[in-house]
Image 1: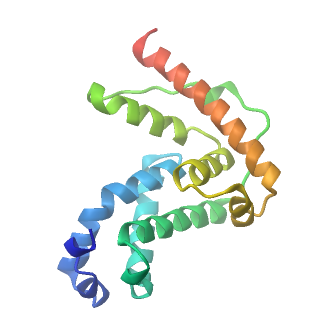
Image 2: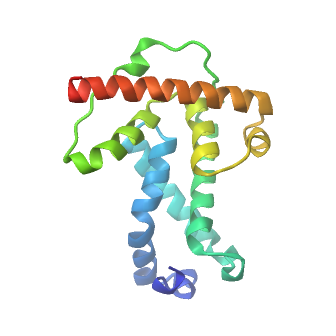
Length: 182
């Protein structure tokens, strides 16, 4: 993957190389940003912040330590978490209102509908649930590290993950009924 992108040219600020890197990673980074943000508009803003951070930090990337894609992903997750922290403190919700379950869905084709259903359902989770679910499930970070990252206890991380999974299941089931009429 790194051979596709001229990292040296990107580090030197060459626009064509940076545009190529943007085009290559934009869909991947946007998917990460959608998982951490409630709306596509917020995800687009976060993606822009991610690329600014990536280009500013590209000098610290060392190909000997690993592939570029995981490095880009880690920076993107950190940008998303920092954006959420700056907007507000993480609110861990114990009681949920029914409005979290009312989600209208429209799909362009059946093939993409399952992935889109899951992504939109994740976006509907409250911030604290969504962050912990993303970090644990998609980023494969252990509860001890999540607790340190979010300044919460390990027990809180575990309980919020369990609650996030339960709510996510309800959201997905409700949206299937809404979309498929079953």
